[in-house]
Structures are given as structure tokens and as C-alpha cells.
Image 1 (cartoon, rainbow, N blue to C red):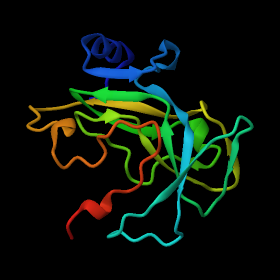
Image 2: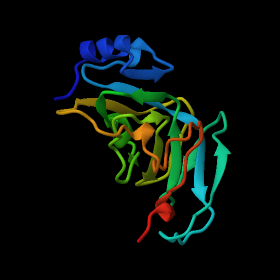
Image 3: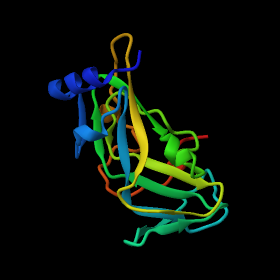
Image 4: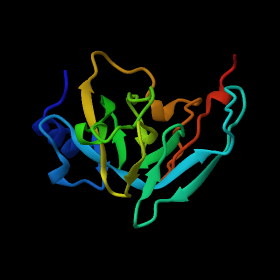
Length: 178
């Protein structure tokens, strides 16, 4: 079950959903619009290794925007910091973003109950497109959880993406044992 706008507001009032900064105008019928933060990152190497710590270069999006190029994976970040203590958050692209040929995540659209952070975006484009810090980039949808959660994401000892950040975070696949 997806939460409605009224239900999202109720959960914000209860403190089970936190969105900072929160703007009532960004609340849709059953979603909340999030915006591109001011930082992007690219990997230093064109060949990534799933067993290695692949380093990234961060840079700030200039006021005149930044042109994303096809064939490059950009890591972005939401301006909004969120906490979700009783629901499963999903991040999806906005239709306006998709119609510009921008994909905002490769596979990581679902958060866990207990996720408390900004969202790192895995951005790719179909053709060159100029993006701007603060532009609407996606929408959060909240699903009800059926059953009690045993271990919240923010209390897991092995949670890889729980350090609060305002910058995109590179893959932590290298921390897995395989």
C-alpha cells in the first residue's frame, strides 16, 4: 500500500518520516518531490572493479549548470535528507526528468526501514543534457510495512551507507565478502 499525501503528512507529524528541508508544495498526491543537490561525482577510473574500492571525484554544479554526457555514470545526491522509521521508501524519477533522457538510478531505488540520509543517485543520460543544483530530480514514494521489523537499517552494524553526507557516495560493494 502506497501512502497518500494526507498519510505522509500524518507520518511526518508523528516523526516516522522526516524530510529536511520540507516544502509542502513538493508533496504530490502520493509522493514527495526531491531535488538535485549541489554535488556530483564521477569515478576516477573508467574500469570499475567490484572487489576494489573505486574512488570518485566530487565537484560542485556551477550556477550555469553542468552538461551530463552519455557513457558516463554520474553520482548525484538529493538536496533532501530523509529518515524513514516505519515505511519502505522508494525513489523514482519524475516523468519530466525521464522525458529529458535522465535516469536517476540504475538499480537502487528502494530504501530500507531505518534509512536516514540523503539519497545517492546513479545518473545516466540518453543524450547530453544540462542539469542544475536544486532542480526537481525524483520523487519519494512510501510503502507500508507488513509485520514488525527486526533490525532497522540505521542500527545494523554492517550498514554501508549510514554515514550522514551531503555528497554522493561511491559503491561499497568492496566491503562484501565474495
